Length: 280
Image 1: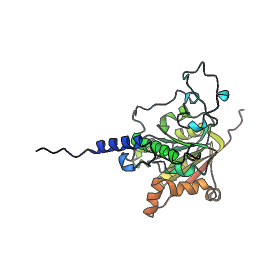
Image 2: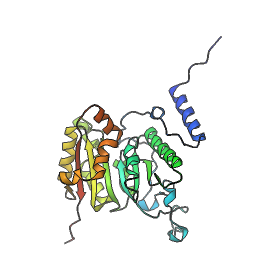
Image 3: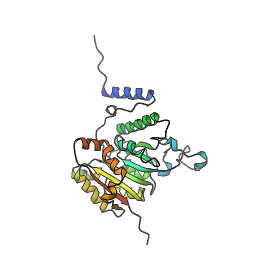
Image 4: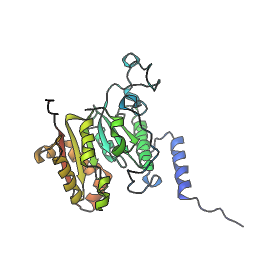
């Protein structure tokens, strides 16, 4: 008498997600059903969807509570997206490489007047964050809590200017990025001279880039590259200590919690976007 083989991990994962969706996504998702390798190659083709330009980005599907009234919506007759629905306000905070969304969820009530977006290249992890946000919204349906956060599967190293206009973002978080220890892999680090110019383009003057890592070599690399960039100036230690976003970043990300449990050291550096000099 033959017995049925035990279900595979993939089958268990699919069955769990199907049951969770049928339940209306009220239960918070479990990470074990969304596992994926720790890092992804940012230079690979990942079959990603991205807008041709920020003006054609459909933010409405991510922030339904912030869709502008019909009288406030722009004329879209010439748009490539005829069903385009603009928001009442722009996204102003980005968590690049948001992981499992711990920082997004923690910042949602602290930055209630801002729209926050998490950008994550790993498909399973991005789906976990999206399901987590849906569940939190459903469980807080009587309030507006968590309506101001969302997650995209995206490769910020390639397509950041496709999502954000010039001087749109007020805060950018780079939390525990892949250190890429080997010298030949340094070009894949999330901080570089080229990428810092893209951050400068999408950030408002006065905006802050927040960085944190438990790898001292990477910390020094990020500090060096931001210090060498004409559009950024390092924030003082006193100002860092008084910034609630820094305190939240230290303890609420999944990697930050793991480092804390292992009694590791965390290296923080923040950089302010400077005003552009006047044209001669």
